[in-house]
Image (cartoon, rainbow, N blue to C red; front, side, top):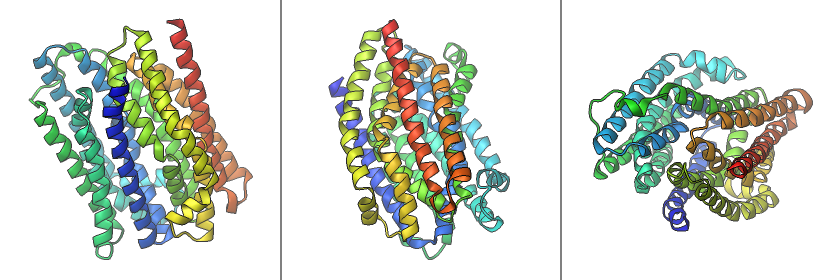
Length: 430
């Protein structure tokens, strides 16, 4: 297991570290190039297609694809399943992305209701392009899931670096030529690179796509039920993220950007450590369904690695939150305060946040999507109620961002504690 974590997990961790570094460059370019309102609208525009992408594809493909592919022993049947899965994602999310692009104005009125009409028009225009980028990311995700199931992590690690790198490069080179729409153009170009890298690696690793639909039949047994259960499981998190953006849109100008940047920076090790360890361990957990003892050992080893990295980072980030942000960004006093508030409360809950991916995968690997749904819905509903009440009802406008920050902290801590208890209970019963 240690060798497994160090090979796949460390490679994905390095990728996530580089991606986070580029994400900082992207955010710094956005805040340097555009005024506060424009930065707000960029983050709000990303939230619209991201909601549908992470709800139906981003957090769903691997946990549905890998266990089913692992159960198929015949090579020809594996090819049929991969092909059927690919065409299913392409048709379903392609249709959804096209509809989202046409309905961007109406979606903006829901997702960014607190903005004025002029900013909503600009958000809708940018969101149309971003729907194109998430479609490319969705079909790239099928190839990535295949490679993950075969423990091939090189292209999975490389693709997101090119995606974010393309956005950074376009912002730096073309910032004066296309205005805010350069973000949309760059996202499509970056997503194209993401797709191309995973597509090439898929074929180099003997993956093939044919014209098959829902074959083999046995692999698609109860597929719809499984899919919608996992979508429901993802819905709690996506609704929470959307609610946070909606709440922030009613607060002071710059609140959406402050919340997004502070939350992303505070969760920096979530992708570098939390998801990297979880993604590299998940195929192993899925293949050990009949051996609870082995699964337990995989989880314990994974949690040790996660806590080893995240606890020191959480302490340092909490103590030096203001100094870190002053070093990284050239914020005004109010923008610094709002971003620091979100960053502080998020980073001190970082160890809890980073355990969530691996703990939830215990249930998903054992074909139980109901338990994670209940846990996520409970913890995130509580967190959203806390955030909305504090931000919109209790706190004054100049400190209202604190409500969203405490909501982040609550979501991470409540979720990890409940998941930890349920995992302990599961293994104790076995």
